[in-house]
Image: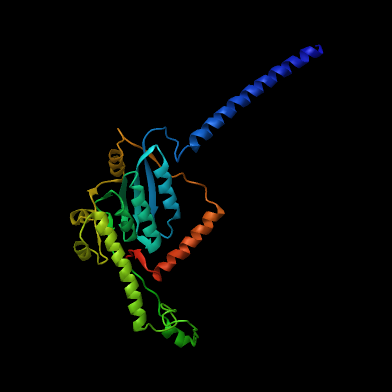
Length: 296
């Protein structure tokens, strides 16, 4: 066989491999493009964005960022905030609450309650346009709690003493190494009650109720979803799917609305460190004022 006869098959093979490579490149590019648009692989059209608030509320950053993304997306017509939380630290709770109120200026927000939406979880819920819970959802716990250990007797038995140098009488308020003074109690009670008044004001605003009507309900107790509906703390009894349907109607979406969920990412070293930080911060609940419900 001559030299030309040898080269021709090789040339054909090159064309074959080039064609296959181009085909797979187009397929990969298409898939990457489809998955990079938004948070899910669903098609275009008006959708309901889902925000999940689960567990103790120790940080607002991720949830606030999620809400802002949905607010900016032109294909998201409404948002459902799915709450399954016993509450958390005061400032992060208030940040999420304020963000939902701002988002509502552009798009309707439905608060959907899962197993529990108590204390800070309920605080966030009242920011929505409509609140929906299951019949047996734990709702309420309107109030603020703060406690800290006093270990003076134990330290005396062990023989440990602390020498504290401070710039003012209340600089070491809450210290476990000294007895609680009347000034301590007055100061901490004033702070907790101020946060409590902020909670009651948020409920009054969100539920269009008079503060005098809320205060009898705001002694820290919790209610079922059915009880909450009767008391005016929520609007509707329904499931998560019902909340999505309601959001679709409020967002003027025809038919069954599609949903967009935050994409799950693979755990990284940073996530692991953040998780440990979260566990540490959760332990602060016993020492920091919190919109938190706990059953002991």
